[in-house]
Amino acid sequence: MTVLGDDLPVTLADGTLTDHVNLDYAATAPCLAAAAEAVNAILPWYASVHRGAGAASQRCTLAYERARQTIGDFVGARPADHVVFTRNTTDALNLLARALPAGTTVVGWAGEHHANLLPWTDTVSLPVPRTAAEAIAGLEAALADLPAPPRAATPGRAGTPGRLRGTVLVTVTGASNVTGEVWPLAALTETAHRHGARIAVDAAQLAPHRPVSLAATGIDYLALSGHKLYAPFGAGVLVGRADWLDAADPYLAGGGATAYVAPVTDGDLIGYAVDWNSGPARHEAGTPNLLGAVALAAVCETLAAADRDALAADENALVERLRDGLAHLPGVEELRKFTDGHDRVGIVSFAVAGVPAADVSAYLATRHGIGVRDGLFCAHPLTERLLADASARAGADLGPTAVRASVGLGSTPGHVDRLLTGLAELTRDRFGGL
Image 1 (cartoon, rainbow, N blue to C red):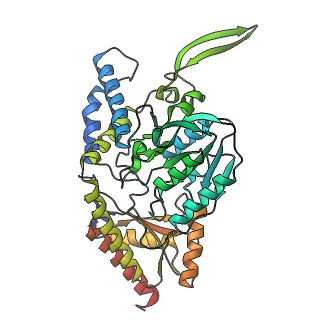
Image 2: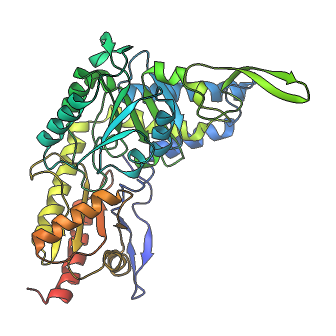
Image 3: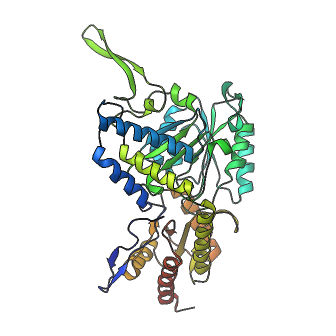
Protein backbone atom coordinates (compact mmCIF):
# COMPACT_ATOMS: atom_id res chain seq x y z
CA MET A 1 0.00 0.00 0.00
CA THR A 2 1.31 3.38 -1.03
CA VAL A 3 0.80 6.68 0.76
CA LEU A 4 1.28 10.00 -0.97
CA GLY A 5 4.03 12.40 0.05
CA ASP A 6 6.65 9.95 1.26
CA ASP A 7 9.32 11.54 -0.95
CA LEU A 8 8.64 15.25 -0.47
CA PRO A 9 11.80 17.42 -0.50
CA VAL A 10 12.27 19.89 2.37
CA THR A 11 14.96 22.49 2.99
CA LEU A 12 16.89 22.30 6.25
CA ALA A 13 18.22 25.23 8.25
CA ASP A 14 21.64 24.95 6.58
CA GLY A 15 20.08 25.15 3.11
CA THR A 16 20.48 21.49 2.18
CA LEU A 17 17.63 19.42 0.77
CA THR A 18 16.41 16.17 2.28
CA ASP A 19 13.33 14.01 2.05
CA HIS A 20 10.60 14.77 4.57
CA VAL A 21 9.96 12.20 7.31
CA ASN A 22 6.34 12.27 8.47
CA LEU A 23 6.04 11.03 12.04
CA ASP A 24 2.76 12.82 12.75
CA TYR A 25 0.25 10.20 11.60
CA ALA A 26 -1.80 10.50 14.77
CA ALA A 27 -2.76 14.08 13.91
CA THR A 28 -3.45 13.60 10.20
CA ALA A 29 -2.39 10.53 8.28
CA PRO A 30 -1.13 10.92 4.72
CA CYS A 31 -3.48 10.07 1.88
CA LEU A 32 -3.51 6.47 0.73
CA ALA A 33 -3.03 6.22 -3.03
CA ALA A 34 -6.22 4.16 -3.27
CA ALA A 35 -8.20 7.03 -1.74
CA ALA A 36 -6.83 9.56 -4.23
CA GLU A 37 -7.51 7.18 -7.10
CA ALA A 38 -11.11 6.64 -6.00
CA VAL A 39 -11.70 10.39 -5.77
CA ASN A 40 -10.15 11.01 -9.19
CA ALA A 41 -12.35 8.30 -10.68
CA ILE A 42 -15.60 9.82 -9.40
CA LEU A 43 -14.71 13.48 -9.99
CA PRO A 44 -15.74 13.58 -13.68
CA TRP A 45 -19.15 12.29 -12.62
CA TYR A 46 -19.47 14.59 -9.61
CA ALA A 47 -23.12 15.54 -9.18
CA SER A 48 -25.92 15.67 -6.62
CA VAL A 49 -26.55 12.73 -4.31
CA HIS A 50 -30.14 11.56 -3.69
CA ARG A 51 -31.47 14.54 -5.65
CA GLY A 52 -31.30 13.87 -9.37
CA ALA A 53 -32.50 11.50 -12.08
CA GLY A 54 -29.59 12.08 -14.46
CA ALA A 55 -26.88 9.53 -15.07
CA ALA A 56 -24.24 11.45 -13.10
CA SER A 57 -26.51 11.94 -10.10
CA GLN A 58 -27.55 8.29 -10.12
CA ARG A 59 -23.92 7.18 -10.32
CA CYS A 60 -22.93 9.44 -7.41
CA THR A 61 -25.87 8.28 -5.30
CA LEU A 62 -24.87 4.67 -5.87
CA ALA A 63 -21.23 5.43 -5.00
CA TYR A 64 -22.28 7.21 -1.81
CA GLU A 65 -24.49 4.37 -0.59
CA ARG A 66 -21.93 1.73 -1.57
CA ALA A 67 -19.40 3.67 0.47
CA ARG A 68 -21.74 3.51 3.46
CA GLN A 69 -22.01 -0.26 3.12
CA THR A 70 -18.25 -0.74 2.64
CA ILE A 71 -17.42 1.30 5.73
CA GLY A 72 -20.07 -0.53 7.74
CA ASP A 73 -18.57 -3.86 6.69
CA PHE A 74 -15.09 -2.64 7.66
CA VAL A 75 -16.16 -1.99 11.26
CA GLY A 76 -18.43 -5.04 11.53
CA ALA A 77 -21.71 -3.14 11.60
CA ARG A 78 -24.74 -5.27 12.42
CA PRO A 79 -27.61 -5.41 9.91
CA ALA A 80 -29.78 -3.00 11.92
CA ASP A 81 -26.98 -0.51 12.68
CA HIS A 82 -26.88 2.93 11.11
CA VAL A 83 -23.77 4.25 9.40
CA VAL A 84 -24.06 8.04 9.58
CA PHE A 85 -21.56 10.19 7.71
CA THR A 86 -20.11 13.05 9.75
CA ARG A 87 -17.14 15.40 9.39
CA ASN A 88 -14.85 13.58 11.84
CA THR A 89 -14.81 11.78 15.19
CA THR A 90 -15.55 14.97 17.12
CA ASP A 91 -18.61 15.59 14.98
CA ALA A 92 -19.74 11.97 15.34
CA LEU A 93 -19.51 11.97 19.14
CA ASN A 94 -21.29 15.30 19.36
CA LEU A 95 -24.06 13.81 17.22
CA LEU A 96 -24.34 10.87 19.60
CA ALA A 97 -24.36 13.20 22.61
CA ARG A 98 -27.30 15.05 21.06
CA ALA A 99 -29.11 11.76 20.44
CA LEU A 100 -28.97 10.41 24.00
CA PRO A 101 -32.35 9.78 25.63
CA ALA A 102 -33.27 12.36 28.25
CA GLY A 103 -31.72 11.60 31.61
CA THR A 104 -28.90 9.44 30.27
CA THR A 105 -25.90 9.16 32.57
CA VAL A 106 -22.54 9.04 30.80
CA VAL A 107 -19.64 7.19 32.41
CA GLY A 108 -16.15 7.90 31.11
CA TRP A 109 -12.56 8.50 32.10
CA ALA A 110 -10.78 11.77 32.82
CA GLY A 111 -8.03 10.94 30.33
CA GLU A 112 -10.06 11.02 27.12
CA HIS A 113 -9.35 13.10 24.05
CA HIS A 114 -11.40 16.29 24.16
CA ALA A 115 -13.68 14.86 21.45
CA ASN A 116 -14.80 12.21 23.92
CA LEU A 117 -14.56 14.41 27.01
CA LEU A 118 -16.41 17.63 26.24
CA PRO A 119 -19.65 16.70 24.41
CA TRP A 120 -21.19 14.87 27.36
CA THR A 121 -23.31 16.17 30.23
CA ASP A 122 -24.40 14.35 33.41
CA THR A 123 -21.04 12.59 33.42
CA VAL A 124 -19.48 10.24 35.95
CA SER A 125 -15.75 10.83 35.44
CA LEU A 126 -13.47 7.97 36.45
CA PRO A 127 -9.78 8.51 37.27
CA VAL A 128 -7.18 7.53 34.69
CA PRO A 129 -6.36 3.87 35.34
CA ARG A 130 -2.79 2.61 35.65
CA THR A 131 -3.56 -0.86 34.30
CA ALA A 132 -6.16 -2.43 32.03
CA ALA A 133 -7.45 -4.43 34.98
CA GLU A 134 -7.90 -1.21 36.95
CA ALA A 135 -9.96 0.25 34.09
CA ILE A 136 -12.29 -2.75 34.14
CA ALA A 137 -12.59 -2.78 37.93
CA GLY A 138 -13.23 0.97 38.03
CA LEU A 139 -16.03 0.68 35.51
CA GLU A 140 -17.52 -2.26 37.37
CA ALA A 141 -17.61 -0.30 40.62
CA ALA A 142 -18.98 2.86 39.01
CA LEU A 143 -21.83 1.06 37.26
CA ALA A 144 -22.68 -0.94 40.38
CA ASP A 145 -22.98 2.32 42.35
CA LEU A 146 -25.34 4.01 39.90
CA PRO A 147 -29.02 4.11 40.88
CA ALA A 148 -31.19 1.96 38.69
CA PRO A 149 -32.77 4.19 36.01
CA PRO A 150 -36.16 3.51 34.40
CA ARG A 151 -36.06 0.40 32.29
CA ALA A 152 -35.97 0.71 28.52
CA ALA A 153 -35.98 -2.00 25.92
CA THR A 154 -32.62 -2.07 24.16
CA PRO A 155 -30.52 -4.67 22.38
CA GLY A 156 -28.54 -6.93 24.65
CA ARG A 157 -24.93 -7.87 24.72
CA ALA A 158 -23.35 -8.76 21.38
CA GLY A 159 -26.64 -8.00 19.62
CA THR A 160 -28.75 -10.52 21.51
CA PRO A 161 -32.27 -9.22 22.28
CA GLY A 162 -32.73 -8.37 25.93
CA ARG A 163 -33.88 -5.71 28.35
CA LEU A 164 -31.15 -3.30 29.33
CA ARG A 165 -31.44 -0.05 31.19
CA GLY A 166 -30.70 2.03 28.14
CA THR A 167 -30.07 5.24 30.05
CA VAL A 168 -26.40 4.73 30.87
CA LEU A 169 -23.68 5.17 28.26
CA VAL A 170 -20.03 4.27 28.79
CA THR A 171 -17.60 6.17 26.57
CA VAL A 172 -13.98 5.19 26.04
CA THR A 173 -11.13 5.55 23.60
CA GLY A 174 -10.07 2.50 21.63
CA ALA A 175 -6.41 3.55 21.66
CA SER A 176 -4.91 6.57 23.38
CA ASN A 177 -3.88 9.43 21.11
CA VAL A 178 -1.16 10.33 23.64
CA THR A 179 0.44 6.97 24.42
CA GLY A 180 -0.95 4.60 21.80
CA GLU A 181 -2.04 2.16 24.49
CA VAL A 182 -5.01 -0.01 23.47
CA TRP A 183 -7.88 -0.22 25.93
CA PRO A 184 -9.53 -3.56 26.87
CA LEU A 185 -12.65 -2.98 24.78
CA ALA A 186 -14.05 -6.51 24.93
CA ALA A 187 -13.94 -6.61 28.73
CA LEU A 188 -15.29 -3.07 29.10
CA THR A 189 -18.14 -3.86 26.71
CA GLU A 190 -19.02 -7.01 28.63
CA THR A 191 -18.98 -5.07 31.90
CA ALA A 192 -21.15 -2.29 30.50
CA HIS A 193 -23.73 -4.69 29.08
CA ARG A 194 -23.88 -6.76 32.24
CA HIS A 195 -24.94 -3.60 34.08
CA GLY A 196 -27.47 -2.64 31.43
CA ALA A 197 -25.38 0.13 29.87
CA ARG A 198 -24.35 0.80 26.31
CA ILE A 199 -20.82 1.63 25.23
CA ALA A 200 -19.46 4.09 22.66
CA VAL A 201 -15.88 3.84 21.39
CA ASP A 202 -13.73 6.64 20.01
CA ALA A 203 -11.89 4.59 17.38
CA ALA A 204 -10.06 7.49 15.74
CA GLN A 205 -6.65 6.06 16.67
CA LEU A 206 -7.62 2.40 16.84
CA ALA A 207 -9.21 1.86 13.42
CA PRO A 208 -6.12 2.83 11.37
CA HIS A 209 -4.02 0.25 13.22
CA ARG A 210 -6.25 -2.62 14.36
CA PRO A 211 -9.40 -4.35 13.11
CA VAL A 212 -12.49 -3.52 15.16
CA SER A 213 -15.94 -5.09 14.85
CA LEU A 214 -19.20 -4.03 16.45
CA ALA A 215 -20.75 -7.41 15.71
CA ALA A 216 -17.86 -9.37 17.23
CA THR A 217 -17.40 -7.24 20.35
CA GLY A 218 -20.93 -5.99 20.99
CA ILE A 219 -19.80 -2.34 20.96
CA ASP A 220 -22.94 -0.23 20.62
CA TYR A 221 -21.50 2.87 18.93
CA LEU A 222 -18.23 3.59 17.19
CA ALA A 223 -16.84 6.84 15.80
CA LEU A 224 -13.86 7.38 13.52
CA SER A 225 -12.27 10.00 11.26
CA GLY A 226 -11.20 9.68 7.65
CA HIS A 227 -8.22 11.98 8.12
CA LYS A 228 -6.76 9.55 10.67
CA LEU A 229 -7.50 6.65 8.32
CA TYR A 230 -5.56 7.76 5.22
CA ALA A 231 -8.61 9.46 3.68
CA PRO A 232 -8.15 13.20 4.36
CA PHE A 233 -11.26 14.39 2.52
CA GLY A 234 -13.35 15.66 5.44
CA ALA A 235 -15.48 12.63 6.29
CA GLY A 236 -16.00 10.56 9.41
CA VAL A 237 -18.71 8.19 10.60
CA LEU A 238 -20.83 7.29 13.57
CA VAL A 239 -21.85 3.64 13.41
CA GLY A 240 -24.23 2.01 15.84
CA ARG A 241 -27.65 1.08 17.10
CA ALA A 242 -30.55 2.71 15.30
CA ASP A 243 -33.12 3.29 18.05
CA TRP A 244 -31.52 6.26 19.82
CA LEU A 245 -30.59 7.86 16.49
CA ASP A 246 -34.06 7.45 15.01
CA ALA A 247 -35.74 8.80 18.14
CA ALA A 248 -33.54 11.90 18.41
CA ASP A 249 -34.11 15.24 16.78
CA PRO A 250 -32.03 15.64 13.63
CA TYR A 251 -28.48 16.73 14.32
CA LEU A 252 -28.87 19.44 11.67
CA ALA A 253 -32.15 20.84 10.37
CA GLY A 254 -32.29 21.10 6.60
CA GLY A 255 -32.85 19.43 3.27
CA GLY A 256 -32.13 15.73 3.08
CA ALA A 257 -33.18 15.16 6.68
CA THR A 258 -36.79 15.95 5.80
CA ALA A 259 -39.46 13.66 4.40
CA TYR A 260 -42.01 16.49 4.11
CA VAL A 261 -42.32 20.14 5.17
CA ALA A 262 -45.58 22.11 5.30
CA PRO A 263 -46.26 25.69 6.44
CA VAL A 264 -48.37 26.22 9.54
CA THR A 265 -49.91 29.65 10.16
CA ASP A 266 -51.01 31.17 13.44
CA GLY A 267 -52.33 34.64 12.70
CA ASP A 268 -49.40 36.60 11.30
CA LEU A 269 -46.92 33.96 12.41
CA ILE A 270 -45.75 31.23 10.08
CA GLY A 271 -44.05 28.04 11.18
CA TYR A 272 -43.37 24.70 9.60
CA ALA A 273 -44.52 21.19 10.35
CA VAL A 274 -41.82 18.71 9.48
CA ASP A 275 -41.82 14.97 8.99
CA TRP A 276 -38.20 13.96 9.54
CA ASN A 277 -36.59 10.99 7.83
CA SER A 278 -35.49 7.99 9.82
CA GLY A 279 -32.25 6.18 9.17
CA PRO A 280 -28.89 7.85 8.49
CA ALA A 281 -30.50 10.57 6.36
CA ARG A 282 -32.13 11.97 9.50
CA HIS A 283 -28.72 13.25 10.63
CA GLU A 284 -27.16 14.04 7.23
CA ALA A 285 -28.89 17.29 6.25
CA GLY A 286 -27.42 19.26 3.37
CA THR A 287 -25.41 18.14 0.37
CA PRO A 288 -23.33 15.18 1.54
CA ASN A 289 -19.56 14.87 1.28
CA LEU A 290 -19.47 12.39 -1.59
CA LEU A 291 -15.71 12.62 -2.11
CA GLY A 292 -15.02 12.06 1.57
CA ALA A 293 -17.29 9.04 1.67
CA VAL A 294 -15.78 7.50 -1.47
CA ALA A 295 -12.22 8.09 -0.25
CA LEU A 296 -12.91 6.58 3.16
CA ALA A 297 -14.58 3.55 1.62
CA ALA A 298 -11.62 3.01 -0.71
CA VAL A 299 -9.25 2.92 2.28
CA CYS A 300 -11.53 0.57 4.20
CA GLU A 301 -11.70 -1.76 1.22
CA THR A 302 -7.94 -1.69 0.78
CA LEU A 303 -7.22 -2.38 4.45
CA ALA A 304 -9.86 -5.10 4.64
CA ALA A 305 -8.09 -6.94 1.83
CA ALA A 306 -4.67 -6.58 3.48
CA ASP A 307 -2.97 -8.81 6.04
CA ARG A 308 -3.76 -6.72 9.11
CA ASP A 309 -1.74 -9.01 11.37
CA ALA A 310 1.36 -8.49 9.23
CA LEU A 311 0.82 -4.74 9.17
CA ALA A 312 0.45 -4.71 12.96
CA ALA A 313 3.62 -6.78 13.37
CA ASP A 314 5.60 -4.35 11.21
CA GLU A 315 4.22 -1.41 13.16
CA ASN A 316 4.98 -3.06 16.50
CA ALA A 317 8.58 -3.53 15.41
CA LEU A 318 8.83 0.19 14.61
CA VAL A 319 7.28 1.16 17.94
CA GLU A 320 9.63 -1.07 19.91
CA ARG A 321 12.60 0.25 17.95
CA LEU A 322 11.53 3.79 18.83
CA ARG A 323 10.78 3.09 22.49
CA ASP A 324 14.03 1.21 23.00
CA GLY A 325 15.99 4.04 21.39
CA LEU A 326 14.29 6.67 23.53
CA ALA A 327 15.02 4.66 26.67
CA HIS A 328 18.77 4.93 25.97
CA LEU A 329 18.81 8.70 25.48
CA PRO A 330 19.79 10.86 28.49
CA GLY A 331 17.10 13.19 29.78
CA VAL A 332 14.34 11.64 27.63
CA GLU A 333 11.27 10.20 29.37
CA GLU A 334 8.38 8.43 27.66
CA LEU A 335 4.79 9.10 28.69
CA ARG A 336 2.68 6.08 29.57
CA LYS A 337 -0.43 5.10 31.50
CA PHE A 338 -0.39 1.34 31.64
CA THR A 339 2.37 -1.06 32.61
CA ASP A 340 5.08 -2.03 30.14
CA GLY A 341 4.18 -4.82 27.75
CA HIS A 342 0.67 -3.50 27.16
CA ASP A 343 -0.57 -3.59 23.57
CA ARG A 344 -0.20 -0.27 21.78
CA VAL A 345 -0.55 1.27 18.33
CA GLY A 346 2.07 3.42 16.62
CA ILE A 347 2.06 6.43 18.95
CA VAL A 348 4.81 7.40 21.39
CA SER A 349 4.95 10.64 23.39
CA PHE A 350 7.98 11.83 25.33
CA ALA A 351 9.66 14.87 26.86
CA VAL A 352 13.27 16.02 27.12
CA ALA A 353 14.39 17.45 30.45
CA GLY A 354 15.33 21.11 30.19
CA VAL A 355 14.27 21.46 26.54
CA PRO A 356 10.79 22.82 25.75
CA ALA A 357 8.76 20.47 23.58
CA ALA A 358 8.29 23.16 20.94
CA ASP A 359 12.06 23.53 20.69
CA VAL A 360 12.48 19.77 20.31
CA SER A 361 10.00 19.58 17.44
CA ALA A 362 11.49 22.66 15.76
CA TYR A 363 15.01 21.17 16.04
CA LEU A 364 13.86 17.92 14.45
CA ALA A 365 12.09 19.78 11.64
CA THR A 366 14.79 22.32 10.78
CA ARG A 367 17.85 20.12 11.32
CA HIS A 368 16.56 16.71 10.23
CA GLY A 369 13.42 17.21 8.12
CA ILE A 370 11.21 15.35 10.59
CA GLY A 371 7.61 16.25 11.32
CA VAL A 372 6.33 15.49 14.83
CA ARG A 373 3.73 17.13 17.08
CA ASP A 374 4.29 19.03 20.31
CA GLY A 375 1.73 20.22 22.85
CA LEU A 376 -0.96 18.52 24.92
CA PHE A 377 -2.56 16.71 21.98
CA CYS A 378 -6.19 17.76 22.63
CA ALA A 379 -6.07 15.64 25.77
CA HIS A 380 -4.93 18.25 28.26
CA PRO A 381 -5.91 16.59 31.57
CA LEU A 382 -4.33 13.29 30.56
CA THR A 383 -1.12 14.68 29.11
CA GLU A 384 -0.53 16.96 32.09
CA ARG A 385 -1.05 14.01 34.43
CA LEU A 386 1.36 11.84 32.46
CA LEU A 387 3.96 14.61 32.33
CA ALA A 388 3.77 14.92 36.10
CA ASP A 389 4.26 11.16 36.45
CA ALA A 390 7.16 11.17 34.00
CA SER A 391 8.79 14.11 35.79
CA ALA A 392 8.58 12.17 39.07
CA ARG A 393 10.23 9.13 37.46
CA ALA A 394 12.96 11.26 35.88
CA GLY A 395 13.56 13.37 38.99
CA ALA A 396 13.38 16.47 36.78
CA ASP A 397 10.77 18.91 35.55
CA LEU A 398 9.95 17.88 32.00
CA GLY A 399 7.96 21.00 31.26
CA PRO A 400 4.30 21.68 30.53
CA THR A 401 4.06 20.00 27.11
CA ALA A 402 5.35 16.92 25.31
CA VAL A 403 6.46 15.67 21.90
CA ARG A 404 4.56 12.97 20.03
CA ALA A 405 5.93 10.74 17.27
CA SER A 406 3.48 8.50 15.42
CA VAL A 407 3.91 5.96 12.65
CA GLY A 408 1.75 4.10 10.18
CA LEU A 409 1.66 2.88 6.60
CA GLY A 410 4.71 4.31 4.86
CA SER A 411 6.85 4.52 8.00
CA THR A 412 10.19 2.70 7.90
CA PRO A 413 13.00 1.76 10.30
CA GLY A 414 15.03 4.49 8.61
CA HIS A 415 12.48 7.09 9.64
CA VAL A 416 12.65 5.96 13.25
CA ASP A 417 16.45 5.91 13.16
CA ARG A 418 16.57 9.46 11.80
CA LEU A 419 14.39 10.63 14.69
CA LEU A 420 16.62 8.88 17.21
CA THR A 421 19.72 10.35 15.57
CA GLY A 422 18.27 13.83 15.80
CA LEU A 423 17.32 13.37 19.43
CA ALA A 424 20.76 11.92 20.19
CA GLU A 425 22.38 15.08 18.78
CA LEU A 426 20.00 17.27 20.75
CA THR A 427 20.60 15.46 24.03
CA ARG A 428 24.35 15.32 23.44
CA ASP A 429 24.38 19.09 23.11
CA ARG A 430 22.19 19.41 26.21
CA PHE A 431 23.75 16.77 28.44
CA GLY A 432 27.27 16.52 27.06
CA GLY A 433 26.88 12.88 26.15
CA LEU A 434 26.34 11.82 29.76
